[in-house]
Image (tube, rainbow, N blue to C red; front, side, top):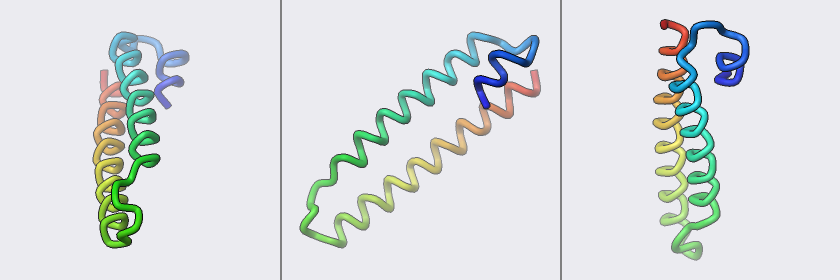
Length: 75
């Protein structure tokens, strides 16, 4: 969606779009790394808690990014 704004929507602040794209890519790298590492794999409760927190953090980050994307259209 951000690429659509970048390429096809005239008048959008390109610096904000580029910053948002960088944020999305950084978030992707961060969460892939976090998925690859789980301390306490032998303890199912600890693992379940870890991934529950990971999902919660991811959803929070996604909601923030969606709000920023919506802000692009209001400019």
